[in-house]
Amino acid sequence: MLKDRMKKHPSGMLLMTEGNPVSLILLFSVPMLIGNLFQQVYNLVDSVIVGRYVGADALAAIGATTSVTFLFFALCNGIGTGGGIITSQHFGRKDDAAVRSCIVNTGYIMVAFPLVVGTVAFFLTEPVLKLLDTPAEIMSDAVGYMKIMCIGIVFVSLYNYASSMLRALGDSKTPLFFLVFSCLLNTGLDFLFVCGFNMSVRGAGIATVISQFVSGITCLGYAMLKNPYFKFSKEDLRFNKDITLSVVKLGIPLSLQFSLIAISCMALQKVVNSFGKTTMAAFAATSRIEQIIHQPYQTLGAALSTFTGQNYGAKKMDRVREGYRKSVVIMVIFSLIMFPVMQLASEGIVGLFVKEGPVISMGAKALRITSIFYVMLGFIYVVRGVLNGLGDSIFALLNGIVEVIGRFVVPVLLVGIPFIGLWGIWWSVGIVWSMAGITAVMRYLAYRKKVM
Image 1 (tube, rainbow, N blue to C red):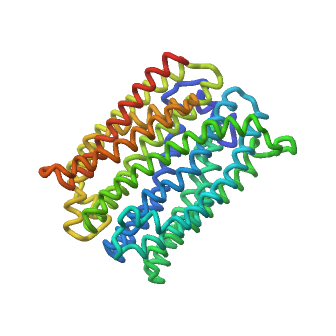
Image 2: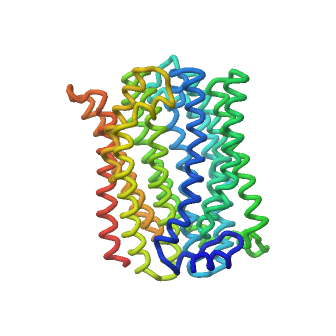
Image 3: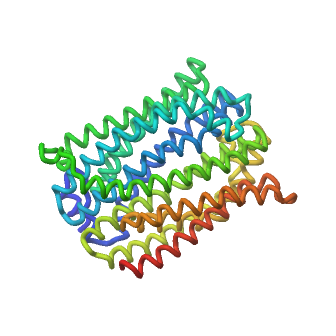
């Protein structure tokens, strides 16, 4: 039955208001998970090539920019996410005119906003890195890499916009195809610029920006050629105040949520920097690894968001509840599988990024600590997916505030305890995941009584 439904949508769109929720969520998730993993390869390739061919200092320089980059990207990506959720709700209602108008008006915002954010971010890069106590010996590389990434914000936003709109329509395959190509391109350009031209971290940044541009422009161009919802009339291209306000109303809290999380990560990075370059390199390596661990959870949450948005638009709340329950089961199973992997193979995993023994030893122990809390991390994404799909903007801010409080307070307290010391960095990561996960579940239970 599900395959038959797919045959009715040659453009790859999937209506998720009928059929088995688990099958639909998994069918939608798999291409998106592959795409998300390939997207992480952008950062992983940068880290592996720079860490192994340039050195731990260069890896620490890239790691020092991670939270700052996330902050600036988050300001833009929240709008795209909000627009995708509103689009999925209109798609569930089968309101084709509203779907096209939502795609267009979200696009207008996603052109202007990244240009403003990228310009401001470019000039704030060095002051912000200094505020985080970035060591002087890696400051030049960190600033150079960060400024290149600021220039690329508009390209990252372009791909995220196109993929958000397509996924809102149930198409998780199209973004994958272009992302895989651009990922392969990024790998080749990394070797060319870093190893061939000896451009160090700046070469890695340039490779990433070029690759993001290719994935964004090709994905959007293909959508406009093949997807009927991207074929606009003059009426569709008009500015729609109501739809724009609905996108902004949801997108701004999501941007603030992502930004608050980014700011909290910057606070944690400041603590990390105070322990020196070895700790910075280990934290950079474990952060890259955890970005991969996040992907199945993030993918499940994003799929659940589209599933929820479409069924909320179709007023099928029983399916929303069922989708949440089954997604929790999937999440717990994955968490239980990953725990022994990180406990037993952490040295080999960290060793993929760096050659220095002290960094590998520290990073391995760090992964064994954070893997204890994977179930709580999963709850964050699953609950966020449902509440975002329902358009709950209050949760977005609540979740961000909890993470800010946690990352500003918990690491400082833990590293000050003599028998914990620097390991408090990674214990604080797990504790903050737990704080946010518990808060998310509490919000879901309260919101379920209100709208379900």
